[in-house]
Image 1 (tube, rainbow, N blue to C red):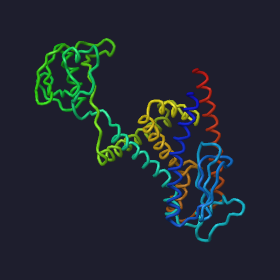
Image 2: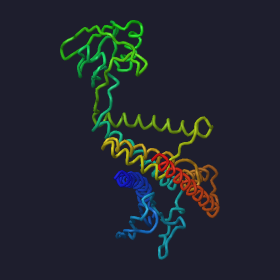
Image 3: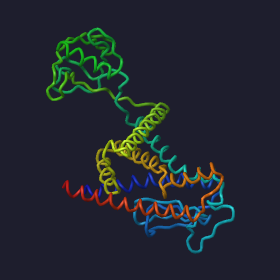
Length: 350
């Protein structure tokens, strides 16, 4: 059952992320007047196909591990296809080709921001900007002292506290000096003063009051703003991690389609909101990594366009195609190796 759920979850994750990515290429090409031959989800033989009135082909292919938007004029024409003069990709100015290539990743990043905003609006997060209690942990000093969900800790040993981390650190410091501490607590319209013992907890290795923050759900505007900030921080963390990987400061832990399928199933089993955040993370990863200047990826093609814009001359088309083909072979080889590693790890852990 877990395997079937993982496969379904994987198809949903890849479908959402890939279709949004390729739609970024597609809609930008259409706006800029570039002819599109085919929009496809999946790879391999076509299972379903539909040709619209404009002559463009929409396809669902056998293996749900990717997709593509096949633009006219990139030397990928099938038999019987022709390129409308002036509407081929390679006939366009550099800035148009740059935007078409860039907007696949841009749409992935936008998807990540929107999904995280949906999470902040619909589910909410722990409110670290207040000291309002959201949960009382059984058996801890908070329960014994009579603290309640909704209480707001205003002072610790007479000193004002306004944020959760500030309050938690103050309690640890004061409890380290003397197990007995004084709390001023706001409960509704009342202000209560409590004296309680907060001994060192052997399991956690520090004094523990035994409370958790409350949840807060944002309005849509604030959710979008916080989501954009969170996405930016996640991007910085990803780039820093990749830099440390390249410099040898940490070991590589690369996951392929099988590993992503396993994680997708786990995320779906954790609930709807866990699955939403997982899709957001995968979308952000796909968007950022696809901009790396590696041949065959959008980032590799963007690099050639930027060089063309700087040098005002274009690399011969045959040479560029050869470089991208070599890059594609290397990427496929790496995917096979990573997939083998994922399968090996799954069997070794079961």
